[in-house]
Length: 582
Image (cartoon, rainbow, N blue to C red; front, side):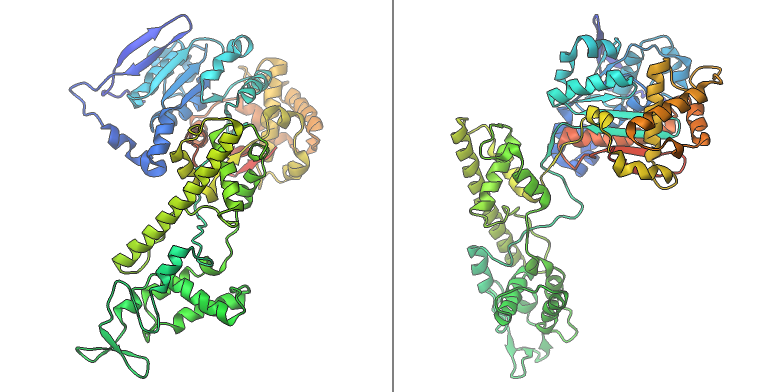
């Protein structure tokens, strides 16, 4: 690890508990990377709104372990607002072997201070604080300390302390992230009382374009086009139709495809062809697989090109599912509508849940079972004026839908005796644009997982360690139990005691009995291997898990993408990994 020459420490305020640090501007010998250049990659991933949310985040890290510093590195680089490290450990020679954020000169110094100092060199806009105190003291004596943070990361807490911290944060609705890099085993657990996601950014989004039931303005727009006469509101017909149905250029006499025909927007074609289908099938859209195939063939039949290469018809055939597939509100969104916080009698004043109530009222009334339009359109082969006009129609309808949702939300607020501006209209508009993909994640609490494991769902996987990493979770839990019972992790004393393996085996057996799984699933080889790890934090494993952990923390801070609901377990030997529900 080389210190950057671009930034040097300019402020270091050390109080009774710790201090805060920041980095200065670059010296004249260096070239500063502009703020826009540094953030460009991040903004491309999650947009300016996500970047702003990240910059407003304040993350607390308990113990500056290798995994914790790797997570922080991946948060500092894109620009998390502030971080605070709570740790009373001193830097030792062992830290030099796996932690890139301490140096030879750091030996004997507070680890929290040294790690904070070097992390801040990565980004001069991030603020870093450190508290040179045992995290146990904060948990036991000052639980209100954690109320100021957006998220808390714990990487090396004993099980009783971890459970107590989890209970404190659960009551305050503060996300807790628990990470572990143990030899060649990695684990990461999100403990989320409730995280509401507006911009989930799905890889494949299902849009509702209302092609099967066009809104009035869209219907008027489509009626201005005619396939037989090639009538087009923006392109005059300069070709002549022949008795045999072909079209000829009036100047050259060559058979051509009229530009007006080949530049009708795909959505116009879809609505017209669907109308034709319904007229011949009792008003019902294609339903069976054979009917859907026959529906698509109609687009080939309507082409004027002998080789059937009119791009707008090819696009319409590709987008056919949007016309005949009924749009249903997803089960995830319906579960939000059915949540107690969205009930008509709910007293919840969270903006997210108030807008959910407004969306449900819209679906039940103006929407006719449909969510508000997002206003987005896919690219289409059409003349510029037609596409812009169609785009404006969808945007205007999306605005009308949003206005209806706003009215519902304000009515809900009035009924609750709340001010009408409690929810910003921009926030309502954002949720309307993403209505089909809003999500909410509630994980199991840590105490529930520890006291009532779902072993009946995953216990059978313990006998297949080559395929599933679930056995590693049990081994990590047993190592933590061993630490509580004997004051150190198995195999962590030097030299390693001969009885560690036997004692660890007993702890594994006891834990398996509590979980309701078979201890016989764990052979002596894997038990010896875990003891041999001696709780070592290999940098390669910590770096890998640090990337996983930082990604999860970032999702929660930004309220974007969907955080993992469960425990991610990684087998560094085989590369097997899984998101497990324990």
